Length: 474
Image (cartoon, rainbow, N blue to C red; front, side, top):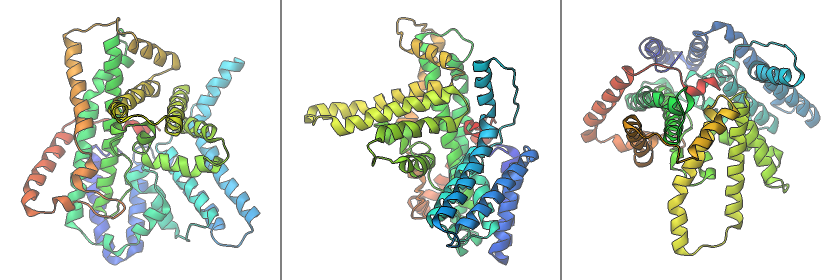
């Protein structure tokens, strides 16, 4: 089910929200059970055949976690249990997400005719990584014992289930047990609705609105320098507002339940380095890769910092999709990050004037590097991506007509939106750590303006184009 669908906004969500606050009067158990069953319903509406895999994954990981929590086994046995758990998760992910990719490459090498046709379960990458983190933390002794309904809700909680953020048990499960969330809070409802409306507008008006320009580079049109750049930039902004919109909508929906989700998107195109970009883009995935892959590989400690970084980014790219284009995207970002770290470590001390120039150029240089990498992320093949990039590097090959001029103005407008306006967290005062929101809008003088603004965004969002979020595919 899509957040930007009429069935979700006007049927499913109102029913779940009303039931939540009614059942909250009778205790925490019914409230948790209601949300867990609602989340499973949300997931199963589109394709109920995928529910057994999700339910089985929850049961399997809860059982493994149950064995890991406590001191009933020695360290060697606990490590074996963890290995079984993580291996089981990765095998399931590998079968459903990568079997077709591996078969295609096997056929290409050995000239066989094997055919594998498996439906990719929506959100499998997200709920698999969420549970792997849970198991590792349980092995480390950082997990308290949780009831099965609480754990099931932690995994299936529908605002995050399809496309993140990747949740951490220490952050989310205790929130389900807070007494405050059982009471209707008009302030949180209004703030949640405001954030949801901003995200809806980003998705249906901004992301979907620029989608036709993406065909300039990734469609059947004849490529030229200007069309390659316009199409690549259009996809850069489409992905930005699509993912940013989803992240806002997830936070807004959850906030109406009184649950604060972690921020997953923080103006990444304002980054002045690739390191800074990855602190802002898909933040919970970056934290997961750092804490559960990069650091266990050795991080900076074994003198293999750059090797570990390359492995982490290659796997991070492959996590996004089963294709060599995603591997190339991860490899390119690993190269960017290595160069960034080398510069930070070995660059000479620059005079003040030179430092000012470098600082001034750092934002556009980082942005261009990100745009080039997105070409691989979006392209159908490596050769197609290289063809687009070759056109982007050939300024003599240009067709600059009236339509291209208009498209360029559209790109300029989107650039201004991304670079000049504050993000949703700044606008609404959303602070996940402090569990506060809307304090900068609390004055009565501003409430009418805020209500009109939210209503306008919601209306424009509702009448916008309906399509799935790009990150649903990962």
